[in-house]
Amino acid sequence: MHTSLLDRLRLHGYRLTAQRRAVAEALDGINVHLTADEVHARAADILPEISRATVYSTLHELTEMGEILELGIEGRSKRYDPTTSPHNHLVCDSCGVIHDVQHGVAAPELPLNEAHGMAVRRAEVVYHATCGTCLAS
Image: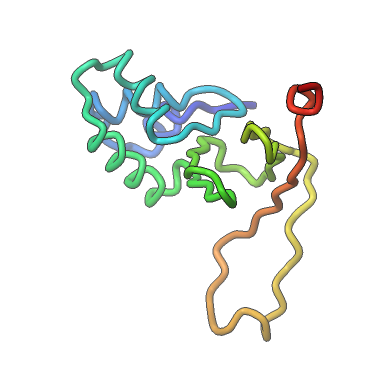
């Protein structure tokens, strides 16, 4: 079952400013992986006076709170994913489209001697491919 970012913010008792609400609504949906500029464009449709700086700071804040994921996929602009439950990603290396992969395969555990004293928070599996549209062109 999909729980929206806005519902999760309410559930955890976070203050819902107009700006935070607009960003949360911009990120609503399943299989959403937007750049900060795309979030700003959607949020501005909801709240026209929202600034790019406010969107950036709100995205940073939501990432720090653990309510969204910041995806740093090689060679691409950062993307923001409102699905925080464990999942992986399938990325078209040509056009950059990203799909959630929910098959349940976890990233391999990092052996303690390879962690170099770091505390691992999470690991990701990213499948690189070419989508059907790019293959056809």
